[in-house]
Length: 289
Image 1 (tube, helix red, strand yellow):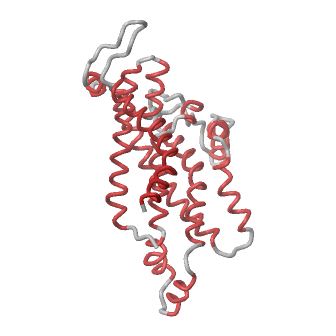
Image 2 (image 1 turned 90 degrees about the vertical axis):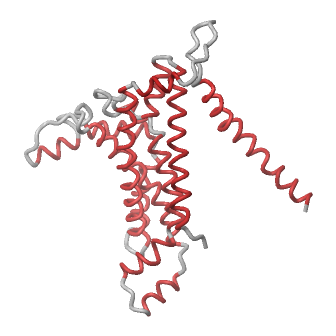
């Protein structure tokens, strides 16, 4: 037994080394850096304690980025998951063109986010874009989708949902195809309706997949930066500035690495809290087969 234990730890050792080197150690270094001021030239960075975190409390852009990210997550996560489940249910049954529909649903996931951003920039172009053209058929006027503070963030949300729903659909489709068919047959013999079967059988059996998809959706909602850089750069008037983009802008544009480190720790704390809620609350409702 001892030899098997040593063998198991040796097999885990490369993954543990990579995890510590590229995840845990950088997080600790970031926490330490957030307690110091930004170094200037050859001058060593002085210890400032929690001053960087106190500065965030008076930073209006930080609070707006936090609010924008909360709205972004609250919109993209449930919409992407529900849409992915509906698409998986649609292509799970035997229907004509099923393979084509699966490819069409999954195609946005295969495109790089930079390419997706450029495609949607054409859709949002005032006067000449797809959406303004469609609105023009119904008498609608010109609208600057990415330049209006009321529509800029919803426009970013639409891009993310279009990109992520197909990716989540694959996991739901795989879970649906592994469900035993005798459950449906037994439910049909008992006279259960399709809605009752979906609510009482399908949804509980999909809960492990839903937890996995939910974790990925939360991470994606807080790590988004690429299409923000391409499409809006956080504008207009910080209407699309999200936490990760604000970290990038603070650290690499304004070169305030101490504040960027404090922002990173705040982001990690938010992700840790959501992970605890997901596995602590939702995990209790999940039964693995």
